[in-house]
Amino acid sequence: MNNKHLTIKQLTQEVGGGLTPRMVRHYHKLGLLPEAQRSSGNYRLYTDTDVQHLRRILALKSQGFQLDDIRQLLDSPEVMSFDALASQLQQQYHSVTEQLARLRQTASALEEFLQRDKQHQDTQLQALEQLKKVEIESAFGLQELDQLWDGLDATCNIQPEDFSESLQQILPDLSKKNEIERDLLAKLVFACGDVSLVDFVRLSKDAIVAARHHLKAATEIVADVSPVVAALDHTRIAHLGAKVKTLIDDPHIHSVDEAERKFCQDKQLLEKLKQLKPGCILVIGYTPSVLMSALQLIEEEKLKPSLIIGMPIGFNHAPTAKRRLMHSNVEYITTVGTLGGGLLAAVALNALVGSLIERPDCHCYLSHRE
Image 1 (cartoon, helix red, strand yellow):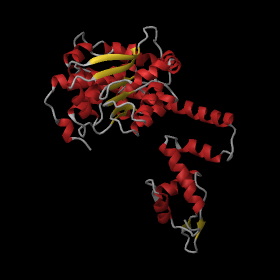
Image 2: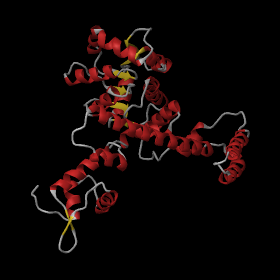
Image 3: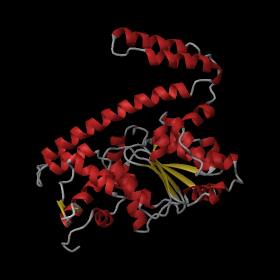
Image 4: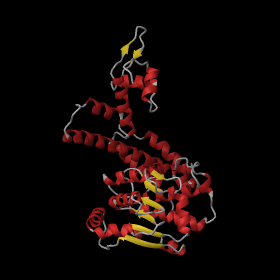
């Protein structure tokens, strides 16, 4: 870019990323962006330095940083020690997790009301009216709040809950997704009890197509560890004629760190991974190293699975492995970031198996592909 001055409109076009003049003015107001030079007509004029500064802001925003966090990072010295940077990021992490906890508490309260049985609507409305009057700042208010919940809970009779109806009250709009994907997402939500998981599940374009095609052909299903295998629906899998294998077939492995160490230390397990049949379905719910190794073998054309359900546990390698999975050429179902685990991975496979048995002639997933 030349060193000429840009108007605010030209600046937003140069930076891109959805930046608008209104956002630029807001960043000036917050002190995130230094005040610009002014033309003789009092118009703001921007330079290449401003372009680079704004791109840094947008890059940090895209990674989930709040504007206050971004200001602290940009105000830091150009060269920081690792310990100083780690300390600053740790403080920001704790701040974010506290916000998440408060939001989760709010969401839980809303879910409680939204999922109450319809026959108790009158009681629910009375409870909401009482809730608005509670003086929460006082100890008496807290006691009154506990009594409110006790009264509302007492209206719940011992009877089967209509889970489908309850879930429909709180799920986001899934109308653009096909019936099989909606069923998959609902089952994952039931497995973890967190509706927000819907926003963190990712499927490749032909994941459902590949799963149904290869499950019909009685493909081999390979899970990384025994606990994941134990959570699979073996009766329905057997009905399809598929076989289930365990990669790290050690009954003494019950934790992620044990599975990671076992896979990394036992070179025969990598050879076992190489020897898996083409078209197999990999279900990885524990070990990030298994997913990373599988992707490396796929790139080397030494492994050809039809689908990877990749939801390993971890706070460092797992998110990295999942990002690599989403950029690979293999069909996948995964979860963004640190969310995941063996139960969710098994539930995803079980949902696909169940949908094939219950709706063998369904083709809705074909018309919804993007």
